[in-house]
Amino acid sequence: MFEISFIPAFKDNYIWLLTQGKRAYVVDPGDAAPVQARLEADGLTLEGILITHHHADHQGGVAELKARWQAEVYAPGNESITGCTCPLSGGESLDVLGQNVKVMAVPGHTLGHLAYYVPGALFCGDTLFGAGCGRLFEGTPAQMSASLDSIAALPDDTLIYCAHEYTEMNLRFARAVEPENPALLARVAKVAALREAGLPSVPSTLAEEKATNPFLRCQEAAVVEAGLEHVISGRNGNAAQGAMAIHDHSKTEIFAAIRSWRNSF
Ligand code: ZN
Ligand code: FE
Image 1: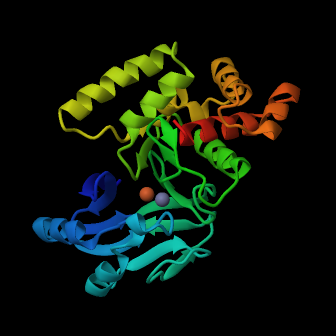
Image 2 (image 1 turned 90 degrees about the horizontal axis):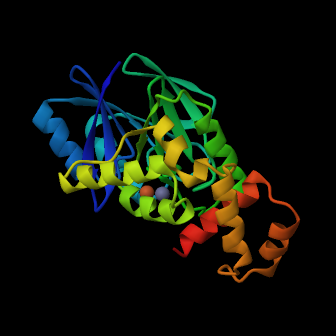
């Protein structure tokens, strides 16, 4: 298996660096400069770039890196990605540094959003975060909910390599949703200690996310109740959603309620 480390970028992005000996891939290089510096410092050769979605903080460094390294660029085929050499739509298998990597379509944050899975590790961009999930810029709650379901179906020990250090902020919201969840309170303390020591809170494990991330817990009684309460209390000010809450509530509707609550939190 290749080794995985991170290159910090911008305020809170992680660019994941995959290495096998001196061969390297990067995931979501939003900025070329820190990647270039790391490749030079470690004497690495960049062979490929994996892109999860089109936002600038994920693909902004592609043109420069591709020009320097002639690297393959794997990216969503239905999004505008500079320098894409290998358009993907999900379902493909890639050879990345000798490992079989499965491409998953996870629409929601954007419509073409992809995640890259190798047994033990998932690179999921802005779909699943530590204790949270990405905003629905392009997709519907149903799409994002289905994408999170496909991630939740992976083995529990899968490490979740998301693209941002958002966990502490997300945990504050998760506590508002589930103030009594003991696994969540334990994670709050753990993440606070990591961040205080200047360490990243990611990767987490899928098991940890399933135990603490409200967006993966839309069928838990406490989350359902909190979601409905939020809708009914009218903090969304949306009468149609209020009517939904009274009559029925699917998992997707609870997800939508929690996601919209998070937007205004
Ligand atoms: Zn994004
Ligand atoms: Fe992002």
